[in-house]
Amino acid sequence: MVGWAKKVWLFYRDGFRNQTWGRPLIWLVVLKFFILFAILRVFFFRPALAGKTDAEKSETVGENLTRNRKNTETYNLKEQTWKQSSGPDSSLP
Image 1 (tube, rainbow, N blue to C red):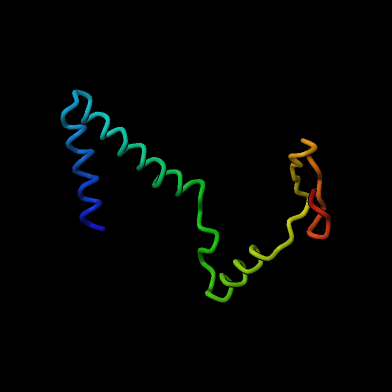
Image 2: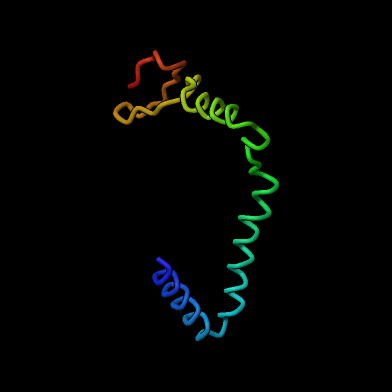
């Protein structure tokens, strides 16, 4: 796995090095990844399970996996219409 990652990195590094815009593009990509994964995560994607005990975490995950989806819409491809469903007991198209 490490050898594969190194080959990919060397491929991109050498490709950007031979271009006139290589360095600015690499820094632009690095800046973009930093913004996506560091800044946006901190402000918009806060951990939902932070500060909970293991029992509370497992209960929260279990509830989210098994809860009924209410008031969802499904699209019928044959009739090309949207159908409002009110729960798991409603029949799907």
